[in-house]
Image (cartoon, rainbow, N blue to C red; front, side):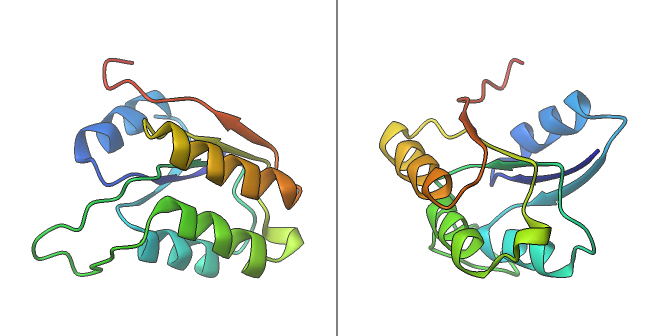
Length: 121
């Protein structure tokens, strides 16, 4: 399976890597990296994890103040149908942001699930 994970927390990225050890994982720490990953992918991702709240890091080569909702909007407006992921899981702890992202994606025809992520998993 090809998986894209958008999350700015390195511990959660490590936990995802352990969870999906036998799969091809692309990590994105911010919205710019996520959009670049979609843009450079030859095929559609099987699974995409999106976080809503993304912090700007000091010395981040891709500084960004936009959120995972901006990635969801980009996916709805710019991602060609043949490159749409099989499923999108929104793992944000921000319930309002997650709901907004989920509704936006569902309205555009994406298969979406809300699943807040726990570092202990």
